[in-house]
Length: 428
Ligand code: NAD
Image 1: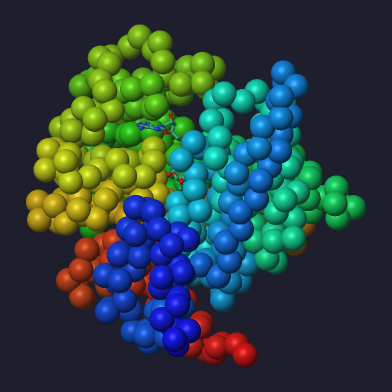
Image 2 (image 1 turned 60 degrees about the horizontal axis):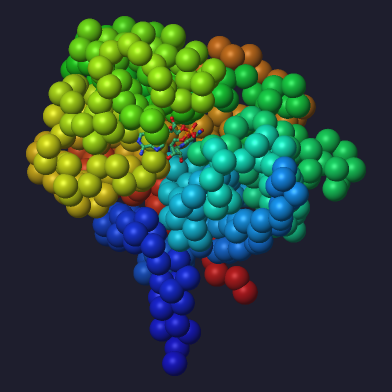
C-alpha cells in the first residue's frame, strides 16, 4: 500500500476528536482559496510531532497521582513552535492537536516567525493546591525537556495557567541548563524577563480588533453594548478595555454563571472581586443569569472568551448580537458558523481576534533574546500595528473572494506557511 494511503487513517485514529475535526474541516474550506499544492495541503493537515507524557505528582496528603500530559507541535517550517499550556479536565491529544493547528495559522497570519504548538495536563486545577500545581508543573516541564527550547518550542500560558506557572517552567528548564533561560517561555513575571503588557495583550488585542471592525462597519465602539463570556485573563481584560473605550458591558460570566445589568456593569470592582475570590460566585450586583442565557442576551457585540464550542447549532439561531468576537479558541462550531453566516452576523475569528497574546509573546521572546526591554507604549503601538495589518488583509481577502472572515483569516495564514514549505522543499 502506498504511504499516502496510511497517513489519513493513522492521523484520524490518533487525533480524532470533535475539535480536531473542526480544525481540519475549516482548513479544507480554506484550501481552495489558498493557492497551495495538494502535497503541501496534505502535509499541513497533520501535526509534525505529538508527545504524551505521564507526570507522577506527590499530593499534599502523601498520595501519588499520575497525570497525563501532552504537547503537540504542528509546523516548524517558519521557526520554533509556540503555544499555550492548559490545565483542564478536558485536555486530550486531539484537543491539543486542533489548538496547535490553529496556532500555526495564527502565527503565520500575524507574520510571526513561529509555527503552532499546544500542550497541557489533564487535571482539575481548582482541586490542586499551589504546592501541588508547582510539583505538577515542574514534572511536566522535565518530561518535555528534550522537546522544548527557545529555538524549538516555546510554551506560554493558557486556560488555568498563569505567570507563576510560567516562572516554574522557566526555573525548571534553567536549572537543567545551568543558567537563566528566560526565552524558554513567554507570559512570565516581569521580574524574570517577562514583558510589560503581556498580561493584558490578548484581551486588549480582542478590543483592538473589535475597534477596527467597528470602523469598517461604520459603527462607534463607544456606542456598543457588549456581553462577555469568560472573565479570566482574556475576558476580564477585554471587558475592562471595552469600558475604557466608552463601550457598555451589559453582562459577563465565568464558570460560576453570569451577571447582567442593562445599565452596564462595574467591571473594575467585579475584576477585583474575581481576583480575590477566584470567581464571580457570591457577587451580589446585577441579575444572575445562566451561561446559556447570557449568550442569548440582546447586545451589539458578543465576546466569547471562555472556551471552545460555546455557540453551536442549538443556540446559534437564538443569538441576538450584531457581531461576534472570538477571544477564546474554537468557541463557534462549524454548524453555528453556517447558521450565523445565513443570519448575517459576522464573526471576528479566533486566529485573528485573540492573536494579541502570541504577538506580545513574540515581542517578549525577542526582548529576552536581545536582553533589551521595551516600554509599554511602544509595545501597545507595535501590537496595534500588527493586528490592524492582519485585520486589513483578512478583510480584503474576505471581500475579494466573498468568503467569511474566518476562512479569509485561514487563507492568509495558510498562504504564508505554504509559500515557506514550497521554498524549503521536502526533506530529504
Ligand atoms: P482563564 O482560565 O484565565 O479564564 C477562563 C475563564 O472562562 C474563567 O473566567 C472561567 O471561569 C471561564 N469559564 C470556563 N468555562 C466556562 C463556561 N462554560 N462558561 C462561562 N465561563 C467559563 O483562561 P484564558 O487565558 O482567559 O483563556 C480563555 C480562552 O482564550 C481559551 O480558549 C484560551 O485558549 C484562549 N486564549 C487565551 C490566551 C491568553 O493569552 N491567555 C491567548 C489566546 C487565546
